[in-house]
Amino acid sequence: MTNPLEPKENQESKSKSFLSGMKADGSGSSSYIGKNIQFRGELIGAEDLHVEGVVDGTVSMGGQNLSIGRGGLVSANIHAQTVLVNGTLQGDVFADDLIEICKTARVQGNLIAPRIKLADGGKFRGTIDMVTGEQGKQDRYNEFKSKLSSSHTLSEEMVNALPPVASGMDLLDETRDEEEELLNETT
Figure 1 (cartoon, rainbow, N blue to C red):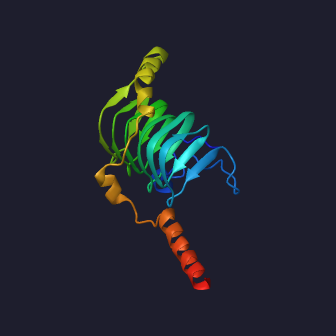
Figure 2 (cartoon, rainbow, N blue to C red):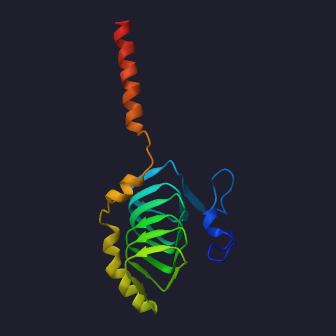
Figure 3 (tube, rainbow, N blue to C red):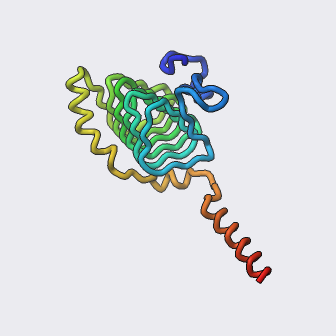
């Protein structure tokens, strides 16, 4: 797997920073939330994750990398080793190593990490806390970890930015209605 933190030409447009180790069958050391996936709740992972879809809740990936692609829309408090943002992020972030906001990113929240990069053109609104030393990092994490259990919801702006997607429940209701009609016809 290549190092996701090494500079790459045109990295923002590819937005697949942690996927290079993934095999064709989907196995490997990375996971992927595609553009047609919407996840709501507490996401806990023990491998790198790339998001092109929607995540709403909390993300706890201690020791792992999280990347948000250009199409990714994340409304969550996050803990990860590194966080690379090309898409939209609303929430507070604690990174053990690095938070990088790329030129296509829109970020609103508080950032805590030893290293933080903001590319020219990247949009950011919030606070930055660059912690130093292991004790300082541990103290800030102890304060931050309560945010990982709180619910975090999408703002109205982010909800309006969501693409229209038929829910699985709508499809299930339609199927049930069709089955009910068939049963009524046979009886």
